[in-house]
Amino acid sequence: MKNIKNKKIAVLCGGRSGERAVSLRSGKRVFESLKKQKFDVIQLDLADDLITTLKKKKIDLVYIALHGRFGEDGCVQGLLEIAQIPYTGSKVLASALAMNKLAAKRVFDAAGIPTPRYVPIDQGTDIKKTAEKIKRTFPFPLVVKPVSEGSSLGVSIIKKEDDLERTLAKTVKEYKDVLVEEFIKGREVTVGIIGQDDDLQALPVLELVPRKDFYDFEAKYTSGLTEFILPARLPKPLYEKVQATALAAHRSLGCYGVSRVDIIVSAADHIPYVHEVNSIPGMTEHSDLPAEAAHAGISFDELVVKILASAY
Image (cartoon, rainbow, N blue to C red; front, side, top):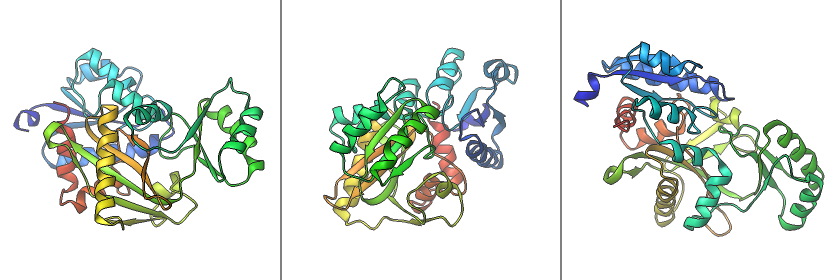
């Protein structure tokens, strides 16, 4: 860390995705932490002339606090690779895989990691025929979600068969690539992963109890809409299985430095089903990762520095 203290750091946030506002909040909090810890740091909004700006400001290292498209999906990571500027977190392929829920699920299937059953749908799909097939195959309720969005943007819980075709058509029109996913009833939990190589560790399991139907965008970022239970109310063997499953999901995608694995622990069979892996977890005052780290005795400042170290 002595060497990094001498580096000029840019906290990259904002961007163009639907999660811009959240990213700005994450970035501001990370920037303030690094500034307080006497790092040479600036906060930078993602712009078209990113590399030119970084070179002009003589940036040595980028802390990526972007969420969603163009920031969490490998695009910015690829630019930084070409510019030979070190950056935090997962590299290009892992970032792209984690952002694309369909690709990630195929990796989970190949690795033997439980994930809810799913059907991919895109603009070329006959929605009417596919909806009828889904009705015959899956019990209701069902989950409809965009393939490449975060923070539960565009996610719908379909409780009635009559609503499926209309919701599919609307979601495909807005997001193009969509997944229909089996609804797993159970405890919603999330597990932060930090560190590298031999220092890789699963943080305490956080149980999320939203006051709404599910843990949507509003529930994630509005105070009082979700109850955090730390540690999650799980028997010790199942608790440890959830952490092991989270580590396996992180490794299967090739994630590095930090991630957050979202899991549903089925009430029926007590199996931890992986929903998705977030390669750049939120760092706001309401975010899951900092809460889990705090429960493990890791302060926010320490967490930021641990993630910063992943750039090297």
